[in-house]
Length: 401
Length: 143
Image (cartoon, rainbow over all chains, first blue to last red; front, side, top):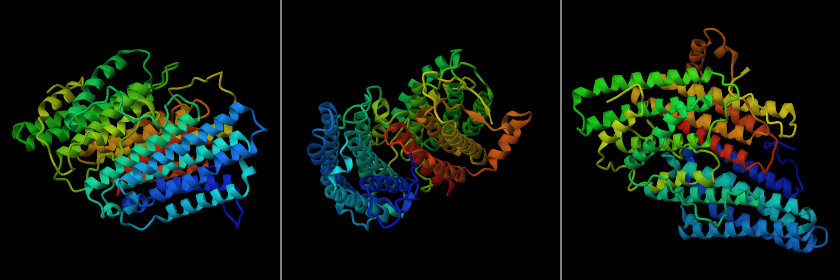
């Protein structure tokens, strides 16, 4: 089995498999490039990428009918055909949505890696047409479909990361416009990942299923979301901390999460002082106490890192998820409450830490992050910070307001 | 390295090449180091900005956990000996303070690229995207 870094070099001709691996590798390279300069160059090519994907996929069902009719059991054939059809429908859906918002009309040159990727896929489609026997077995056909959808997910992810930046890469777009496109690409990434799960026969859902947030997803303004996340977090953290079967990793995560919410409360104290919701003379005292509480939690997290619990269970998905929902909510509130900061100084997590599989219960996290916004990034809604501050500090067993 | 929390081995899991497991283990260890380096940075900034690096550390650790889910065998959380030995904690803190998380993340990405290619491992794809998030997030604060 080759590694991801396997390169397609030489003069060819290359097999479809080699070309698809190369395309996926190109998409992976995009994930770590400095995103601040690439927003529109990636976005403008999304329509081309989808068209090339459709081109490769269009060659798959024909092969299935022509070459595998006698060689494989009917069920496997149907499975491979269904997978290909599912991917075709996914790409059609993404294309329709991208064209509805005129992605291709974004004024920008195309990113060189996007050009390379689309050319590679076009070559793969041509290779498929020339030699339809390349993927005559059904498992191979399914892998082809899988690679294409995985690559789409990676490109969508890189693009939405780039659109979340404040650099020159999105200078040609308004902030709200960039946020809208980013939301679209987030959705497309989620749909692609759902499709990958469905292709592999897992229970994550079909690509046609809407990427709705889970029922317990907090809604409303960022401050309401933070409040909701804190309400979920507090009883869970207390119950888990009191349970002797809780793993050291979970305990460490609890302490670390408490450390950053008390540290974040320090920022909220400053914002509350600025909005005259707290008396100025109380600020240094509150800051000092929160700082001490933060340090204690960090020390506790450090201690738990050292503890070895034999036979303890794995870290739990729920704690992980609620902790990160809280982190995202904290980041959103700080973004709102500190409007005077220069961009990039206290940059919040742009895409948000994600938890667990990107489908299923965690799919709604990015949805909530953007869906909860009620205005542009410059507006600071009138927020009553004190109740939330009280909640934040009450979560800390070592501190009371 | 010594093993910490998770020493369980799932007997129902088919045998996996130890060299491959070592590859995965090395990758998550580098990410744990990067997470510690992020958290150490929170001591170097204003109090109101501490949470940013703490969240960065959690995000990097999130990627490590995601990789543990994707791995072909159960991977323990390992700590370098210099953290565990007597007086190791102080030494570890000083080491982490002096460590830039970005080169560690770059190293982790290179190691991720060297893992065996398995298009059916959707958890690995998710872990890759999570690591890309952590990469972008830390870089935006490191610049």
